[in-house]
Amino acid sequence: MHIKIENLDFGYEPNALVLKNINLELTGPKFVSILGPNGVGKSTLIHCINKILVPTGGRVLIDGVDVSDIHIKEIAKIIGYVPYSANDTFPLSVIDTVLMGRHPHSNWKSQDSDLKIVYKALRTLGITHLSMRPLNELSAGQHQKVMLARGLVQEPKILLLDEPTANLDIRHQISVTKMLRRLSVDREILVIMISHDINIAARYADEIIILSEGGVYTSGKPSEVITADNLKEVYGVEARVVEDNGRPYVILDDALPMDGEEQMWEGN
Amino acid sequence: MDECEQNVPSAMDGYDRMVEDYHASIARKILVLSTSIVVLIVLIILSCAWGTDNSFGTAYKAIIDHIMGKTYPIRSWEWWQDHYIWQNVMPSIVVSIIAGAGLAVGGMVMQAITHNPLADPYTTGISSGACLGAVIAILIGFTFASTAGEYGILSNAFIFSLIPALLVVTISRRVGNSPSTIILIGIAVSYFFGGMITFLMMMSDPIKMYEAYRWQIGSVTGIKWGDIPFMATAVIITSIITYSMTSKLDLMMLGDDSAKSLGLNAEQFRTVCLVMLSVLIASIISYTGIIGFVGLMVPHIARFLVGGKSFFVLPTSMVIGSAVLVFANMVSHTITFYTEVPVGIVMSFIGAPFFLYLILRKKSQRQIF
Image 1 (spheres, rainbow over the protein chains, first blue to last red):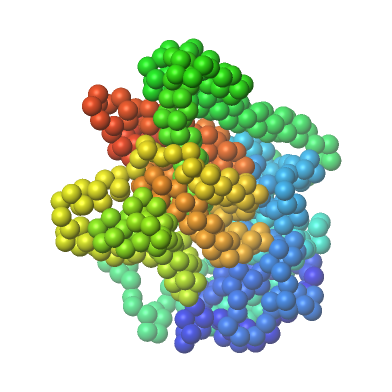
Image 2 (image 1 turned 180 degrees about the vertical axis):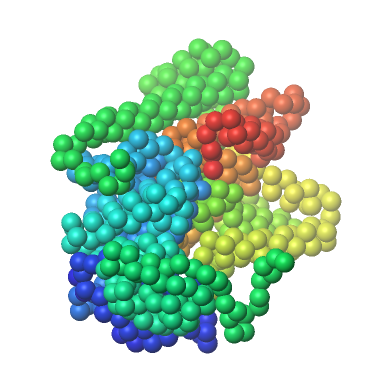
């Protein structure tokens, strides 16, 4: 699987681009993590990849084909998506929610094979015991795992995840990230995960993309891009980066004042 | 051992149990649906018994005999009873069944496409359009039909009720049809039309004002067999179309981003649903006036009973919607001895406390929204 992003622009308002001239190439199987401060367009970027948003300029190519030429249902067959949060206003059961991930593949009713795929996904995430529970009664972490399961049953070649570990405790953050890494190897897929946890990303990702205001600041192997200077420049933090088992590990020291940003009161 | 690190065994240890549980839950839902159908049938017979001051058994026998084609000597007691049931009582029951089912479908679809548990079939302001059309016909005498009177009011209500929906669809296509946009446009249109209704009523004489006001309160009385085919056709066609789209409605309930990522063009689907609902609801309220609560409340009751999957929520909502309106119609004839209380008022009396009861129940048991 190969994603090529060419001169991509996107703005929610005509004169305010969130993404400016993004150029990226990603080839799977690989586990990629996208890092960057709030509001730089991480979610917007992955929404442009799977056509949830239509770019203002430029294009996204999947294996050489422009996504704007691919029907949204065909995209859903090759690109899985796990949202940051999903609407659970209505009381759908976990099994029915995960079965919806099969929608791009099966149209009318769920076949036995779909149930098998759903069971495997629930088993992978250790949530088979929740299968008959209503989604809106689950904890935030359990909810997040159900969304992950739904992404898995799409059986995609590319899996996009918007902060999949945001609501998980540290133990589950590690296990889910490891599972995603293993998934990229076992199923030979390209996994692209947005994350705010630099250390977890640095420890497990094959490649890291750091976005800053408007574009790609840098990308490469974790040891190449997770540096004190980059963190200072992009996040505005003072940090030390040490090596641990060949991977960078970040020790955060302080937040630096940013140009033009209103300061928060940090106590006396 | 870490849950996510376990290797997925090739033997599907708990698979059979999960499938068993899943099929058992489907069987429970079918049982609930079947029970609802039985309750509806009982209510229909009870309504006939109540309407003719007969026992349940007598009413049941009279209905079955008629369906089996039994005839009676003209002007005999049985002939009069049969005539009274099928010409006076049954039309309002059939309209209650059709309108209840249609409003429940409308509410369920509107809640799904707006992701809003408080949405109902009138969210786009369709009821204010219908009211304005009827009020214009009653107060000014301007109608879209060649004749004034009943059919003039009817045609006006139908055509005017499509205006708010048309505005919502047109404006939301220009500015992006997010659920909140649709709801806000619907509110704005309702206020505007509401203002025009009030202005027209203020300018009219008290008798016409009463007639115009009376139209706005939903009622299923006075409807004849000849009125039913149009409404029935709209409800049947819409229900069949909606039933073929239940998996897409489920996707819509997850939110637009998730729906799109699973291959559904959410905006386009929402527009199709809005157009379909507009015709459905217009065809009902132009005959019945504004019957509240069915479209809002019934889908929640159905979800409470059979879960959130639209494949089961849709038929259950339709049956419960019919049953609720048949019951309300029955009660509307018995509250007072000297006059019929419109079913719209009865629905508010029944609906509001029942809805509060469900909300209180939610605290101790399961969530309903």
